[in-house]
Amino acid sequence: SEDEKFNFLDFGGEEIDQYLILKKKFKNINYFIINKNEFNEIFEKLLEKYNYENLFVLKSLNEISNNEYDFINFGSVLQYINDYDFVLEKILVKSKKYILVSGIHLFKNDLVKKNYVVKQMNLWPRKPYLYFFNFKHFTEKFTKNNFTIEFENKNESDEINYENFELEKINNTKYTDLLFKK
Picture (tube, rainbow, N blue to C red):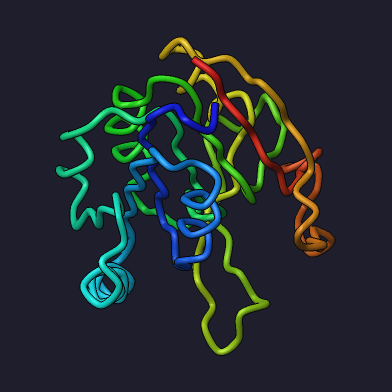
């Protein structure tokens, strides 16, 4: 409902546009955002300059524990977080309804237990490392915390080339969006 009060956590958000779009439609949203310090500082400056209503910049993972969230958004970020298991442990207990994990690389292979670390080559000159997750292992974290998969769709924002990988190891790899519901 547009009038319902709810808490939204944008984990890794980098743009103010998502807050502005949601705030326009949902008057009673409490919008929490957390990212690296350089992005948090930008959001704090915007907050100070424009006095945005119900926008809260979280500076540490510990601050996440101060609230519960109706909707948590991981927008193409989770695969870049080195301690993602720790982050998920913190988040899963604070989520009341939905978690969206978008733009994540998932593969299906029963022989691989957890993930692969790969180097991303399309962001030259940066070449960040990221995780490809085993679908079964990754989703078990959520199901053990009473979440079900509401939908699983191919993310259409980028066309990913997996041809340079040994596909027998990471067969059925897809750039995926997952919505979990509690």
